[in-house]
Amino acid sequence: MIKQLWSAGERFQAGFFAFGRGLFFIARYRLWGYLLLPAFLSLVLGVTLIIAAFWAVQVIGDDWFVGGEWQWLYQGFIDILATLIAVFLALIGYQTLAPLVVIPFLGPLLNRVEKITMGQTIEVGWRRDLLNTIIGGWFALRDAVLQVIFLLLSFLTGPLQPIVMAIVNSFFLGRGSFDYLLEKHSTSLRERKLLTRAYTPQIYGLGLAQFLGLLIPVVGLVLVPPVGVVAAALLIQDHPPQQQLMAANAVSRR
Image 1 (cartoon, rainbow, N blue to C red):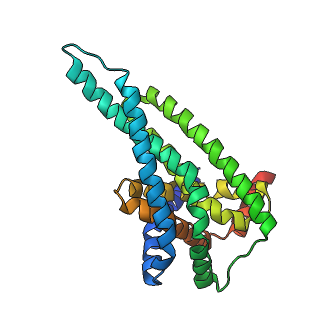
Image 2 (image 1 turned 90 degrees about the vertical axis):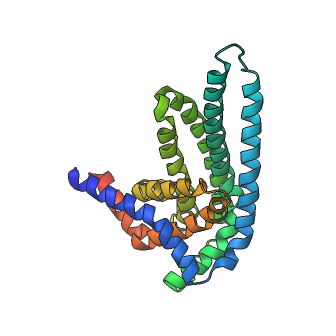
């Protein structure tokens, strides 16, 4: 048990620091040109969602206006709560739409990374691409619903709400970066689920780094999606999917 926890901790740490590795990899091989279109789309998407989320929360907040001598205290509390809700709503919207709007345009960057690290790219047929797109769309919608439920439930945790939602958002952010690669390395939905479970510590670690990165204005929106995908590719190189599947199947037979 202790050995497993220690191993999970090491893989979480590897996932967290892989974000820096991904950024260094892009700089080392001068891959900035591959980031232009995805970065632009990510910036437009992020800014749009932030504005929409704050506007929606402000409109709803106006309906909860309370007058009287305690207005200043009540208004201060509402402003803080509204800001937190708007931030997490924007993150939920971003995580839902980024795999559909931004990540697909990172294909050329991922192909270049595979060419550098493995000497060749992993090609899949158009039918598999179409199936992966449909599955990815379903996952995005399902995850959005789950995150809204988690956001509502997080109010029960009181002052711990930001920490709880940071953990939740970290998983979905990290998995979003891994999903695009696991589509290439799995031949069935079952294999994809097994690989997701096998890479869970790395997913949480990378997702936390991405979550913190998105808190940096403008720069986070520009760099987080491409760096996250490159970091996930490097982590998969460290722990090849076939080894992970063999280990997962061995555990399931016990």
